[in-house]
Length: 219
Image (cartoon, rainbow, N blue to C red; front, side):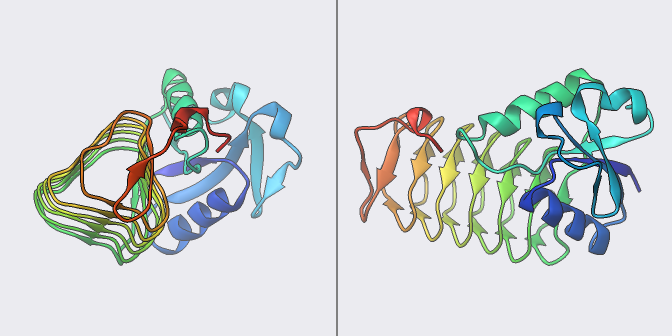
């Protein structure tokens, strides 16, 4: 069991608190946000403290971190605070729902948030700081690298490689053996049947690359 500090006080943080409270051995002890977002001192009955000096109140030797943020700026905002907390000396938990299907030997990194009804097939590796919302199919022999976000009902077929900073919209489908390049955004309902290009935005069936780069989107 670990005593956990959750970064944030919005919906995703509230959900993380719910899941950790009802479906983990861990204890949530506090929330933290940066001072410019500190609007309340209590959230879900627990203290909210400034991130700038959280380590003075909750030392890294005694507490761990969880940063279950959204995919804003192609996961780079979540990445920023993930590394900022690491620099303060914190280690991280990952949450994997007891209602997810995960086979023995599956490698899952730190600060991952994997919700119910995900099926992660054998011989798959998942990196750090990855979010998988409910109901995805992650195919066998896959490699998912750091700072990736799956929404819901994504089908990632077998033998795919997903580079960092990717985002997969609801009901998107990835053919087997695909290489999904860094920063790829796969839109809702898109079907990817060819390797993607870095920071491309792919829409449609079959998916085609648009003219705008994902890293330039206000997303």
